[in-house]
Image (cartoon, rainbow, N blue to C red; front, side, top):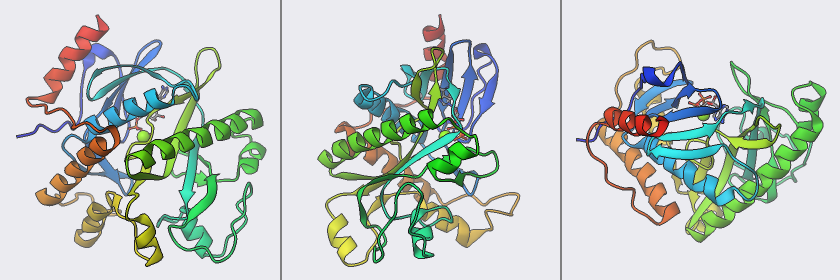
Length: 311
Ligand SMILES: Nc1ncnc2c1ncn2[C@@H]1O[C@H](COP(=O)(O)OP(=O)(O)O)[C@@H](O)[C@H]1O
Ligand SMILES: [Mg+2]
């Protein structure tokens, strides 16, 4: 039976902050980021997916290594498969979203805006007649603010005008985000995958250097599609084959009101296992390696690894 990591309470690491997915222990110069198996949708935790934290953490580590020549990142060490030690940075209030395709279903997605008639996005315009899931001539930068309640999409000009971020910093974020995305797409294509869109977070380190933080190109921060079937399915107006949590979302929508109900039902084990398999598959497809088989209890293992690391 595979253990599931729901939360941690490592008092020996200092005060804990709880993100949707990560437990974060803040130290003087570094953050200890523990990726749990929590799965969020509808702005709440809807399930726990075996091995998800580990997969996200390993995928990020892979991409930090593959992109470190483009922009410095926070990665210092991975003392445990679920843990990244990151350089503590002052995080910048921008979600650096890059999109390679006209897609999405939520109210903030670019397809939703396009379908409603929007063509001028401030820093780029789109022609009439585009179809859902069509590839852009070149990827576009559509940043949003990191607001506590919800993210707002603003054009880069509006972000600067509202005093959210300095023009020069935002320009550099755009330049680096587009380069990261291009690298991501190139590597993905060699593995038979499409990185359709993604979100980066940046911070400033102690020297004021722009630094990539948080996570990169994970299935939580990005849309991943299969390359081989994309063209044919797009031509027929079908959705690409994707690694997505959409089917789990649909199940919750059919079985409760995930926005209102205080207590949610538990998703069927087959769905949970299916999503767990998808996370492991994308790790395999991306890195060419099977994810190592781990057994035993996760919390004591992390504790042991971190005690060794922090000594
Ligand atoms: N190197 C870093 N310096 C400062 N903050 C960071 C760094 N890396 C990640 N973070 C922050 O830590 C949190 C990670 O936890 P997560 O569960 O992903 O949070 P969220 O609920 O905001 O998605 C995020 O708020 C992210 O901005
Ligand atoms: Mg996050």
